[in-house]
Image (cartoon, rainbow, N blue to C red; front, side, top):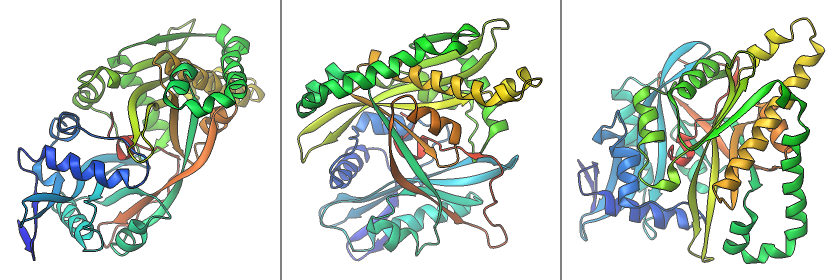
Length: 389
């Protein structure tokens, strides 16, 4: 425990949940819109995490009123880069209570998190930040973080009935939105690849999916965290509320029954207390396509490889949209690095919209170790942005 004037800095203690979610919710609602946490959801997200340690949660307390006024969370996970395992400290939920800004609270909490990473022998630290927000310039860059990659955010309007109920002004755009939905649904019907593959959509997460997801992503991605069985059970099976329960999408070869592509869709509410909005948002996660399988199947006809890859990615995104409709989401988002070109192309060509999102930042934790140049596609871990819910 450290004290700076009336501000006390310490790690998590049982009973902190209510104060933590208050500072988090108030801080992120200053950005006009964001998700809101409850004590139960926070407890599940962090305390129930399989490798939880109190040192992962750093809080600042105004000792005069005994109130939590700052929060930074950072846990160390193993990531695969260029076929080598690195320990990376991931920063989440940097929050300061309104009125306590510009007092160095967030920076001091960041230093606590970085010290924890050093004690855990982390090789690097990572976070995502708004490139135009003051935290990047005033906190992250001075602490040694640098821009690694700009993230693209794709979104698609899902269940129009839900959308119009939650955002009535969009009813004026209903003809355009209905046309977009028709185009998206038509992709599934016209996609000739469906004759070669079969589709499965179920409201649960399977061990088979986890194993294939890990197997494929280790081959095709860099900066990838392999999901353990304990982590999978925690974030996909032991969900604290029904809305978090996943929809699993699987695409199989008809002849071999081999799982060659898939995705997970989960939902959550995004709020704007300023505007009085509450929107149900879907998130597409764990997207994978076994591209090696496509290459091997078309080795005698290379011209078909790119076409079949495009078709299967486009089919996958159309199925993600379909699943989100059934989940009654207003809209769904997918986030990726700029180099995930096939998925990015498929999203746009399946009726999704795109805008530039946050920047992925990295800090080198050891003097003699530099962040390696990625040889594969950068995998954006959803845990960095949406708490793996």
